[in-house]
Image (cartoon, rainbow over all chains, first blue to last red; front, side, top):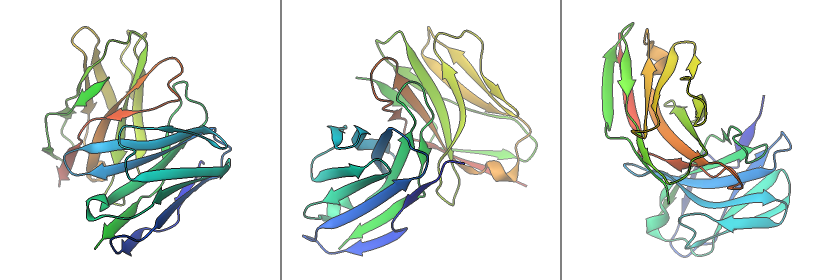
Length: 113
Length: 116
């Protein structure tokens, strides 16, 4: 079975802190994705990566950056956390882009105070 | 840009009954995929069912089936013989074909509660 893990289930940070959310997949998937989930808005794509060191902006990239130094690991970085970034963050991966299923991690509930 | 709309924020059903969740989408693409994902209270999102737009036959996975109406841009999920374990949030998602790297556009979600 594909396994996607995220570094923390719950995280509390203060405004202005730099925050790292990490995601690891164990199935040699090409593509990895970061979403945020908010009530009434569904999931919105922040960034995705289709290869090591390759990244593309999603629909809501402002205030975020990403890093993919190794194929299995995709990090989301909040350079200076703000209260409006309080949300559930979900990581996903897929083998290729062509119709393949995305497999999701358990999510990180981030609260910024 | 694609949009996906789920107009039912919450639904409830009695155990063993059938329920249908609605989803509409808007796209100018001719080649695409549609998905239903389930997110149980434990939060791990899993795929329920997928449909390729070029296939006329509606997808079925055990108790889960879809009604795909391409002209109407509608993609509803039917759950038969509902079970308590079906309680979850359900998301409809769209993926364009071609070199879109598998990006998904999600609807707002529908919370489904199955009552004993």
